[in-house]
Image (tube, rainbow, N blue to C red):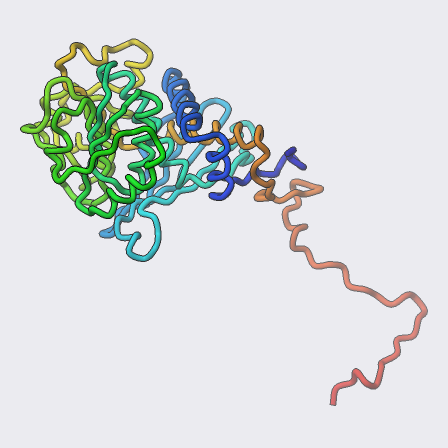
Length: 365
């Protein structure tokens, strides 16, 4: 589907995105997303970066996440409101834009609620491929809410995880996850406690939603060689890990200035040493140094992953024929004459020499 005018924007709805993922398949979508994310992290220094702008309330947070390279500007609007499910809304909702740096024209306007779940899972897999033991086959998944299936499938398809041990304080969430993934080849085990789920796991993923300073993982249940994928702690006052879990691990982050504010790292002093993941992916810093080392990815979500996801989905949509062109930008015969859009039409005037006749039936009383 071709763009009709240079000012038009491709719009991808939630329905478009779901149909695209079904057509491509979850495994292919996650694999291609992970490859796009890793490729962009490797060119880390090409991007103009900043921590996201957040507006916090007692019920949640609304955030704006911008990033740009020399050709493309991207941003995501995203929220996190754990109480939303009580009124039939997702905890996390998002949309995003890709724009041309040279002109400022928005090239893509897209849903990012489904896409955020996919890109977060793909990011987890990118980090785990660099940090977890290569022979990892089992994972504990603590928190079985909206993003849990995506995490499970990413680790299954991209790292070869075969067994996932599940725990959620809401047993219905675990039942939901097991029902959704019943047709996969994963071995899914519902556990009665966090400790039971974590015991013997190669990888531990925490993806809880409550906006609290929680301690989902404590040092006593962490075993040598584990890789911890901390996903749920992603804003000030929202954490999942006991500080001593971080102290006992090699900690890796996306963008340190943002993680210091938002991640589980917020509990530790400013001089606590961490490594940005892009340095590992570029082979400028070591990842896992030995089999018994505990590695930890303090994941908060970073704008670069949304940039990667948006550019991947734009390409996929154009290849598969999804989306519609919309006019967000006025199209003007004279670009300097914006007022022409609302200028009143010229009134009709009587021809010269013609006599005006008032129709009696139109006269007012």
